[in-house]
Image 1 (cartoon, rainbow, N blue to C red):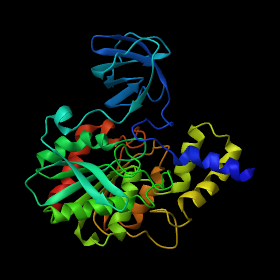
Image 2: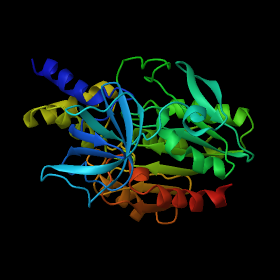
Image 3: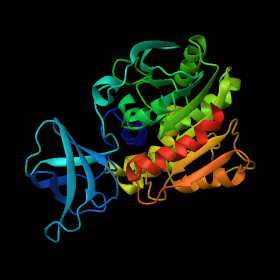
Length: 358
């Protein structure tokens, strides 16, 4: 009985469907819309600073800052409605905030030329977008939990302005990509090999060096690839946004957000440990007798408000390796939404980090 409960509990944490907001994001109700404005349920989430996508049933829109001067009730908040990408926002609709401001592909969303390519991997062909540039240092972008390669669209324009070629990767479990052999997410423990495949593809198509840019578990995959890839010497740098550096904390957060009773959380963690091959001490950046291996200059962008991947592990990693790791802290932003809280500052941080690596 306990084994069956453990498998169910771990499944609640290890199965995060791509393209759906994480369950840690609260549901908000649309109370009203008018030209350039949307009224939402008042919540810590709806009060966040910055620019976010909102998604509902068949709907995607983009909201900007809170309009403090707009008339509202005590239990609502008014934000600027930047655009409705598709669908219709109707009063009473349930929506969630998402880091994805853009939908589509680099051409339809941003007007950037790109090619659909396929990256050979151990499990089959991985779909990817290749946005060309003039430099021989490439950026490989790897999305995280609950996201797709559309996550990279937030920063593609800034990377393109630096004339950097970008490979935005889909990996095992994504739509159009091979399924994981066991059907579950390993929080980067096995998925990093798809990033290794992307490095091989990039080098085979003209990249002299690569910078790995990842969000959430994509950041974990990037770090593992830089540690273990046979082509690790080609990795010029790492940009880790909200990295999952302690898998136990992340599993607990995801399972709890799916309303798993607290007494079952330790059981979920132990079951996930067995199912996904996650072993104590293997978490990138986990506490241990020595600092984790950071093989290249690294920029971590993370915030104390992250309830999925605790920020203190990023701070610990930066403190242990100040020679290689810089930590940019973003207050008030949820998991993997550091860009959303302040796009201009985020992109300036990327520029300062990337220019010496070109």
